[in-house]
Image 1 (tube, rainbow, N blue to C red):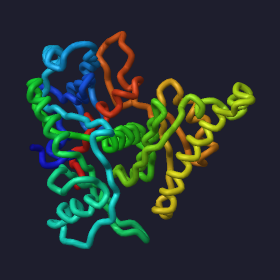
Image 2: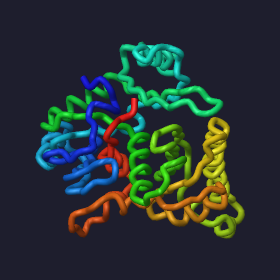
Image 3: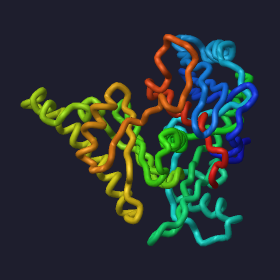
Amino acid sequence: MIKALLSGWRSGANVAGGTLALTLNENSLRYVLASTSNERGATIAKWGTELRGNQTRDTFMKRVKSVLPDAGHVIAVLEHVDYQVLQLESPNVPEAELASAIRWSAMELIEGTPHDYTIDLLTVPPESGRAASVIAVVAHNDIVRSRMLEAQALGRPLSAIDVVETSQRNLLHAVLLAESAENGVAAALVASAGRALLVITVRGQLYFFRRFEFDIDTVGVAADEVKAALIGSGAGEDSASRSLLQLNRSLDLWDDRYPNLPLATLRVDAGAKTQAIVDRLGPETGVETRRLDLSTIFTLPVSKAPAPWLDAAYLPLLGALLRPSEVRK
């Protein structure tokens, strides 16, 4: 069994056969193959989605095996329902005992015994007025084992398992590197299907994350237009207000935790609504707000198909391809 979710494979050099990132669940498979990749970007060779439909699971897996490209490295990206991410204070123990101490601390927040879970850690360094903390990624052993066995059945054994929070961090980091921007304090908001994930990084390292409800359809409409279109019900205005409140609460929580690390930029991806939401959020947050421009970090083959980053479902896979050369522990 892979001992850690986020480590195991370290990028930084191109891999013979390329790198395949995939998400597999009971009813679908989504994948992206990169011929070359590192923390600055990737050359995409192939991508696609296979839906199970009315097929039996066995028939579906046989079909997937026949169409899934081979690769030198294979990364499975867990869906958010398959794991938990916890931010905990770093216990005062020797480094060699940190993983064990965090495992027991995490058990106060999740069900089961410490031996039921695979846990990986990302350390958040101490900052002025705040002790070091640890981001713990926790997945039940049954989930990890299932993903590994499924990949083996497909003839693509896993090199690593990744999660959406770190994948989104990778996308933000690569975009900032492409801009030659100062990699100070930056945030990325990715929203779709009524939900959003906000991650905040400091000098390229993940420090903060939060998921919340976020209605891109109403936030992506100017407030006065919402009122004009929904006079009498107020539903759209209320939905937009709730979404903006959740975002602002998240940013306030960051300010409270790290008052010495003010947010310098907020990057947004919300599909076709991105620019409208950027225009709305800038005045709301008081932070430089721009599109998370993924076209600058990926190269595509000649194809008439829409670029995969235009579909939010592919973003975790694209980010997983950009794993840093040294996975911080």
